Image (cartoon, rainbow, N blue to C red):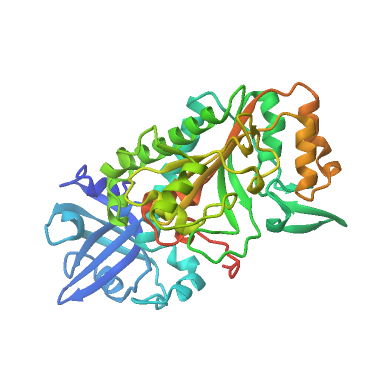
Length: 429
């Protein structure tokens, strides 16, 4: 059975088709019912004319409300007045289920739309975003597999965190304390010594109380780890996978991104290399713009905004101060105050998309860093084994899939980049 996208592409003009979907809009004028149908691929007008279909089919079409599920059979004809320039002239029309009065109308509040998210996901805007998300995730998998990476999957329940205790979701695990994963980071460093090039795409959890337009408590992570590699190689992969996602969306979803506020041309221009700047240099740029930031402090939203202002491609900031970074990031041999770490920062108030680093391989340094950050090294003993038995230089990163989608689609809020968002204030529906 063809899709609405097939019809809109002009492949079926003049032919008789049968379509299935739901009523997106409907109006009756005299002896005609104009039903705009939707399916997963788009919307299309169906015209049901009295006398040209069974009487009960016309009556059902006139009676059916928005979101009723329907089937239409008819001929595809060109009509400039119809959405997309084509329509179906119905020969038969069946209502599969008559919907009740739909609770979503125009000008509903954001909170109400979140309350009825299970219905709002049917909207054209949301389905456009979901199709873009599909292409982004497809590009991520294709990029890493084409580069020789193996997909491996870490546990979601962990005995310790990788990013610090303040954002850990604690849980009772049969009478013992456990946590939801913040990242696959520690497990990747074990797996990379077996498989050399590994990646993962799946959920991570952060108990952050940040109520911003770019934070979720449950989000999807695209993470990679590579043996025999350093920070520069990890940056090259970050640039490569972002560029690959943008390129695929431009090729597969031009109508969607255009409707959402981007253009395919903008996305095609997101090619490596990205502008690269050290943390120290970033502070100088910010100071020249009248923004003072104490050395050692992490970049905040308005500093990231200032660094990306007017730039079409993301910016890579490297060599962050050690004091603000996770214990596993390798010290810069040229400046031990800093670590070989980087962030990829996007514009449009999205901020950090990717965070990564070269990993510390010195067992004593790692143990000392854990103690300095208030952690008990005994809880990480299994992880420290990776440095005791055949450690090699390695590097990797984590990319927030929703933040990448937020930037690609130019979304005001990250919650629209995922079907059912989880935030500090909301865990339903």
